[in-house]
Image 1 (cartoon, helix red, strand yellow):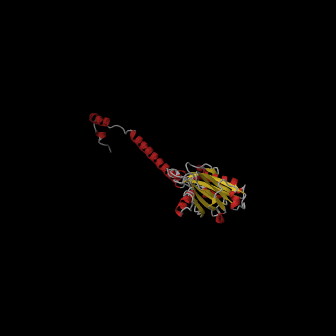
Image 2: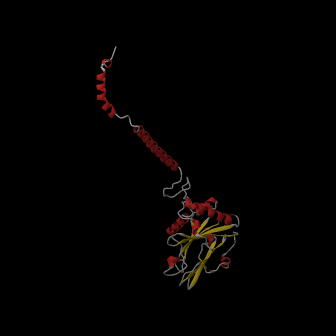
Image 3: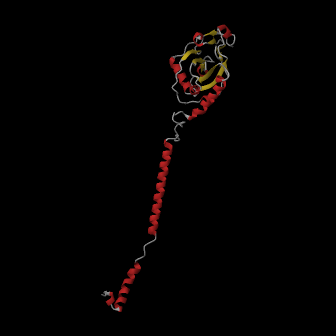
Length: 290
């Protein structure tokens, strides 16, 4: 069977081709850009996928690690501020060198600013222990041989006080660790702490984690009240001990297992009288029998 085109005369075919030619020329072949667009789109999608994956990986990597978003960086599970790690290690070394190896009995002396309670210095003093001092023997070994205002029967230490006329001062000596503190008091000027020689307070650290340690203060003395030294109030003692706990001291002592049996005494030292009294005052904290 033949088709209709087989029966079409040649002239008719020629005429039909003339009609169809413009239409066929107007139809362009498919653009290669169509396939390219698909490839570009897929590339963008892949890039976005990689970014999402990287973001998830970063998020996962910080979930269990250290915080670096501007908050306080911690050492790990216990939440201890890393800022106190070096101070804690330094104190442990200092205590090991003197307290543990060289002497029978030592005391840690800490000083704090009266107004801000910021640490102003520290020292470790040691002796052979059990010096067998009575009041007279203790007085002979100190600079300021005034009235004994201490609770020596309870603490084993003597605090001799000379109220300022023009000049006065205080000397504190222990039956265990020896001389703890000496400082002058001047009526028309400012005295100075003459013993012990204090170390840089930066070594104590500040803003350290408060460990779950409580040490009771056995005795306290206020030398800012003139001729009749008094005890410090419980509120003041709480503030001072909070300042001690804000350092790395307790953590270092705990590391060395030296807190058991430690005796705490606090002194408010006023090296001046009058207008500069508060500016010059210091708290002296003694942790003894280490």
